[in-house]
Image 1: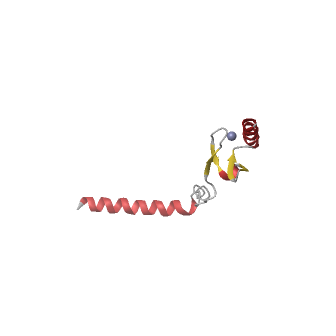
Image 2: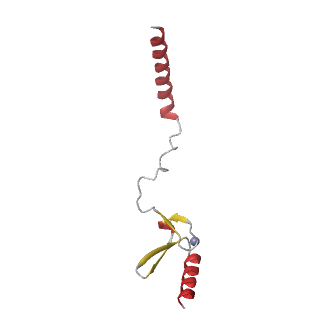
Image 3: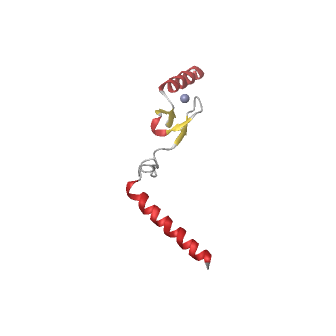
Length: 88
Ligand SMILES: [Zn+2]
């Protein structure tokens, strides 16, 4: 019986505390940080330096009908250079 009273008191104190904290507390902790299911932000691998990065940040290149994404123009240019060197 005593436990129930203590539990009730704790619950009441918790509710009171919560109602105090809600209006004045800083409520900007987790508003815009969640990824909200953006499908285009997929990770792809740079075929040159083999680094994974978000596809939207990548440099796009189409070779032989294949879509390739590089972490930067430098890698893209090196990849093209290495490729053309190999082909010759
Ligand atoms: Zn790279």
